[in-house]
View 1 (tube, rainbow, N blue to C red):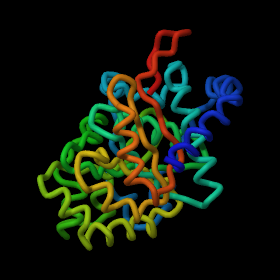
View 2: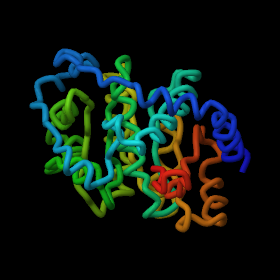
View 3: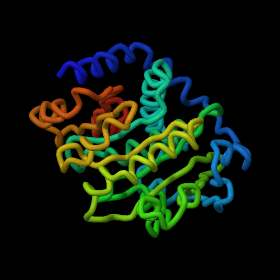
Length: 276
């Protein structure tokens, strides 16, 4: 479990700076991005109509990192800083978010992390839903998704046409959602998937690319796609994830770069709020 142990050590090392980061998070300012910036990564994505997200809906889905007045957003800001520091050191752009099993909160973490990163004035984000068996990104954001990734893989639409520019307040980021399908393993390991990921890395190289993957132990999807990811964020959950499951995940992550392990559903005694 060497790579997971190293990830845990990085978390412990970052805790000493946690208090200062929490104070800084409260003073962050939302930055207005121009319409031109949305299309600056390449392609024709700027032609798509921008969708304004409903704040009430986001709150109901526990997507809160766009609201710097919400104390819960500070945990995601700290995770953002830790993850980006690790990625910047290696020049990494693609972050896979996964979990041992369902119900660990990986999609919620991916969403809030993406929004938190997008709050920074010198960062932009593309969030991709590759959990074909149980896609949740579009529903959590209140977006309509006819097919998204599926239509790109099947050649029925271009990548730029499938990507949705989203906005909440003055905060902007980009989303590539997907519809569900039982052909998950087939699609993940297909040449079309490899080609799409190469296109994403090339055309959106200026963005931080976050990919919401299926749980590791639910099938072979994650194993198949890991070689194409720069690094991995593993989301575990108190009361859900077992030590045996972490050990099993480690077998599949031996060759992967695990930048962090996010422990979800941890009760913070000082505020009685759950982190992540």
